[in-house]
Image (cartoon, rainbow, N blue to C red):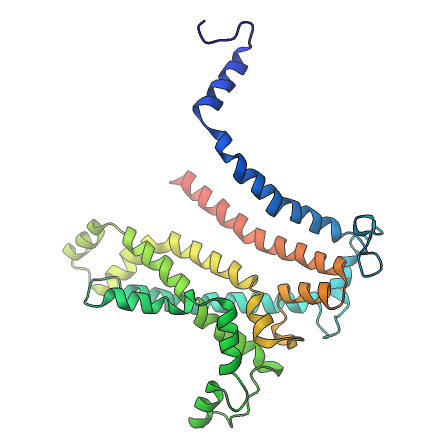
Length: 314
């Protein structure tokens, strides 16, 4: 047979043909990059979480004494110098990420609906909506640090002028620090839901709008029975990505509150950082990083599985 090496097995010829017809080799650079940037650090972190790595054993960190699950136990049972255990950091992270997503989802949806139809100046309004999202998190955190200054900050001045507080709220220390971080995150990230919703609205077929209008559906009926069901998949993905982003947000808490941060804002990335670079307990820090990865992987896996099942049933 022309083009077939003499004596070659048929399966080998078929494999060579598939390799030639499908240039999978073009994926090689991305695969190598993923291995170096993602897989290798993950493997090292998991291995470090099982070792007793601290200041005294850091020099021979790969040969540090094997510690098993003790780092994970210590993370949950032994409070840091700030009096925070891993359980508290997990609670703060979940509360922070879930509450942010719950608040910004209706805000993002309503703003997307407000600029979906054409009107004069729509492009300018759309651009204005994106301002909080394009500002770097570092700049947002520094600005919030000034805005929430005790007594002299903009927030205290407004609340004091309205008679809600006495102007001495202490947003950056104590229990109110969590709410300062929460409000800042809400202000900075709601345009993400807005963008995802706007993209979903562009994908809704015009025929659906026309058919609902012919059926006599009003504005709210079209929104409830046509638009929202069409946006269900986009909104699920947007809420998942939003929650995962908030869960791993390190920059906001670190820059906004400085060192050491209040216990109410010690999310998981902050707990891992201070265990590693302030307390030099690298084994516990690696254990916290592994637990964070597991927590972030679970909802992503469940979402992918649900979408796969939905596709099979469709």
